[in-house]
Image 1 (tube, rainbow over the protein chains, first blue to last red):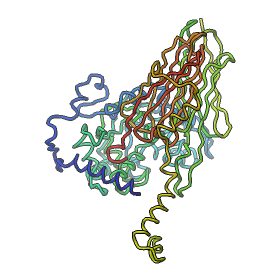
Image 2 (cartoon, chains in turn purple, brown, cyan):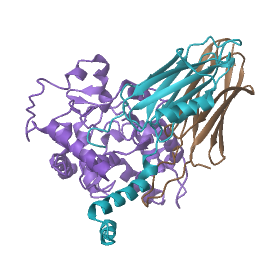
Image 3 (cartoon, one colour):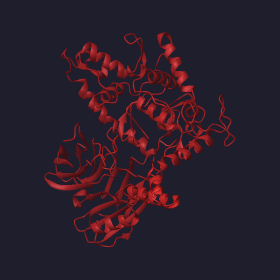
Image 4 (cartoon, rainbow over the protein chains, first blue to last red):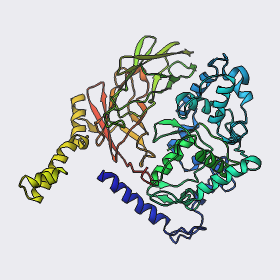
Length: 284
Length: 109
Length: 156
């Protein structure tokens, strides 16, 4: 217990020091002048991982981690895609169907689909992530039970569907019926929370590119999700990452698949509109 | 038997006689270290892949003995000298006695 | 009622009671603090390789600062012609501050062609990776490489 308190004190001090100069609107750090992200912008190898001001998490990873993602064999996330392909073709439920029964070859039918998620789903009257949509298909069309969030089959299917859009630009809509949920996601992103009393924006907008301890803060983009995270030693969803981020600032977390995290997912995806989808990526 | 253990191997399909080629392996396995505790505070027992053995046309060519310090989803790469066409056979042994196997043909010209 | 108050009631003064209580806690926590040390890592290596290794021939390629201690990619290369007369028989790897020192042992032979292995390992804290290569002529060679392992920026 004492060890955790020590970590909290150290982390709080580092976080407080790092954000000391950060006002609500604009960063006014005296420690550096200029753009802390300039080092990445200047590097031509990162051109395909940027879109205007936006930068993929790939840019902030170490060369070894980038190499792991670059090679489809070495990328452990591809194991989840393999799982997903098996699930896609598995007949399940009272209707005697598999995903393939309706959707055929995923490479055709799912191309370009994942990059539009999350989106407003009339059957829910609110947003749906890919995971929610998969479960709607299962219950309504396959008469099969829902898959649990973060379960191996659902992660696999999500990875497989995402994989069909790899390399395509993120393209979520925030107008029309999605608009009020987008606003909720934006509000979540900008609200201070937790013992450390910071919002997502404090790290990922006002301090992206600056170091917190040894860690270089990213823009918190979601274009690589679901991802194989080195820390988790496993493949996981964006909502799992949100949960981790909230825990790290000692804030209450929300369930994976909750409205809060789904609305947040739309806002975060919109922040990355234009970035190429990299799922399944490798992140730290 | 651990569930969903999928071995993957990357072997070049063709090689020249005498060429030294890299073999890459990746197997999905949680490599439970025996150091972690569950929510009730009980130690989760160790359960890892403790060995990977490789034969080339029946002759042992590489072996790895692994400890819990190896990360989950063990990735191991090594080299062999391509001498003759034939079969590379891989076997991963789990603490629980299960053996996961995979083979790959190689053409050497 | 706390154990310390109990002990105090037994007639020990408060300071003595606290010391006893802390001693008890320390004893209970001892297994949690047990981990590899440079000595235990060296002992494990000398159990595996009888010959005293000399520095040289072995290169350990890895990150200076681990991106994340749970998955650290490591490449070990040993300088050897890998012929029938002169080859690397085995490469042993240990870590000197993990809960246990052993990492992996690899067996090679002339059919290997090149003495190089790559793997991904867990590192609990900043520590040394030590590799020993056993050669066909009975000699042994070693290298050591430190990897810094940090807690993530916000403690996560």
